[in-house]
Image 1 (cartoon, one colour):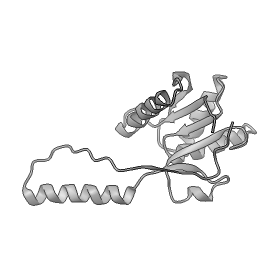
Image 2 (image 1 turned 180 degrees about the vertical axis):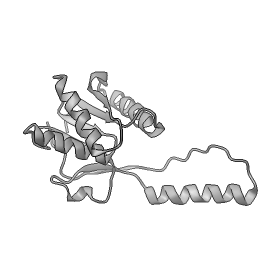
Image 3 (image 1 turned 90 degrees about the vertical axis):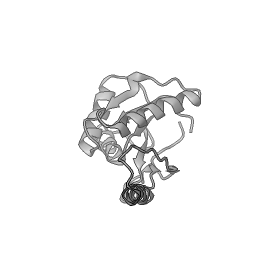
Image 4 (image 1 turned 135 degrees about the vertical axis):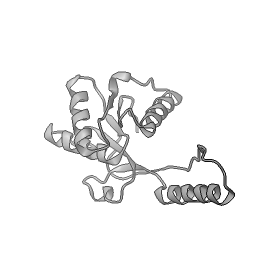
Length: 161
């Protein structure tokens, strides 16, 4: 949609999912020809609405220009909506917002939130299958990595620059 100045609101840095999403954001931005700007990255204390609002407020206080925000989960994105409203800004007219997780309620927001859909049900089923296999076969506990496809669900929260 033409955005070049994209802020990223990361989750808590003590969680592997937060670090992976931040790393993926930086790598993907670079692959698409954008130079990721560390000055447009804010880490949230929690995956919560209040933490998202606080992070966006901190980012705005720096005076750095950005036209879009990618939040590392939907609750953080919801906090962005709150911060934008308090500053008299409009989503998506002034700043586009994208979330992550595609929580069930986000299509009810105004505007409906665009989000990366994570297949939570399939994640649970895969984890249970791996655990049951380990138990049934008497295998020692070991780490496994399984990646399931995510999908962008476009709704009303982004707009072209």
